Amino acid sequence: MKRALRFIAVASVFGLASSTLLAHSDEVLDTQKAPNGGQLRMAGVYHFELVVAKDSKVTTESPVVVYVTDHAGTKIPTVGAGGTATILAGKQKASVTLVPDGDNRLKGVGKYVSTPDMKVVVAITLAGKTAEQARFTPLTAPLAVVKDGHTDHKH
Image (cartoon, rainbow, N blue to C red; front, side, top):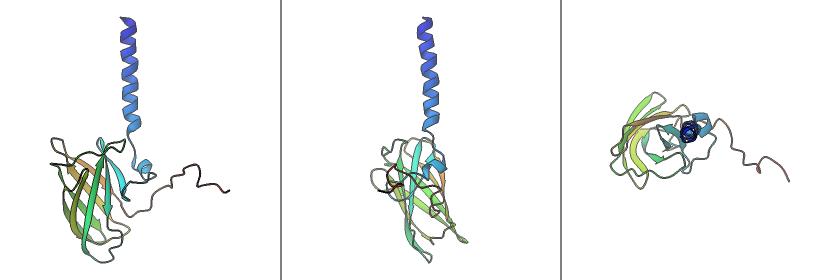
């Protein structure tokens, strides 16, 4: 009996520790290559990847796409989900309604300009879940470059 309780206690500690290890900071996510060329952020138990127009020099209608995955990169269905992206770029503010658009993405269109200081707040509510939010600086250069152990040496 004591042995079983000890096993349960140890397993619980490892379970709690592993959930903490799965959490990623913005700095860590900035070192990872996003699958769709956007910026990754934590949003509760999800990863949101924001993709915006990178070359819009004047305010124009441009797409905003958010991909939703779990920490392992598994696609999370967005059927029945909804959300908003609030974009602050230069002195302009745009609010974009996001609707499901494929397996694990939400999409909307808004009038914005692509500026290096762009900030975006994304709030998404998946079907039957509570709202999750993430903050992005999508046109800021990543904090670090991922080294794969091969590209940083010469032959």
